[in-house]
Length: 51
Image (cartoon, rainbow, N blue to C red; front, side):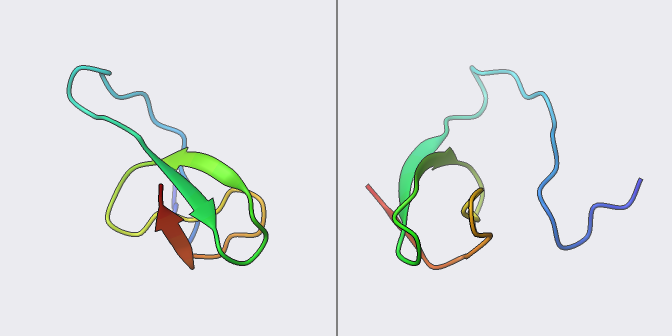
């Protein structure tokens, strides 16, 4: 399965990964994300800010 350029669904143990809260600067969507470059699930923008 190739997942280049898009989100992937993976199960990670909650004691090892903590999701952070973000808000998209493009559409205003609030979401939880992980990683160095979180992407808005609504508009796929990477222009987000950590809350």
